[in-house]
Length: 87
Image (cartoon, rainbow, N blue to C red):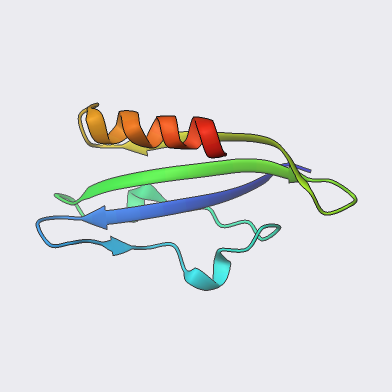
């Protein structure tokens, strides 16, 4: 069964806050972030990790998506490369 783990980072002018509860950062537990709950005027970066866990406990069929209100640029390109190589 496909699993999903969302990593949501929100900021304005301050350093920002990771809104994904740390207790949910476990494979096998789904956490879905809702970008509609982000206050207006805040920047956000949502990385959704999709995967499956096989019977032996290994992670397989990995993919990801990136959703942000930032303009495409070097930060998003680097993040995409990082995820392509390591996820």
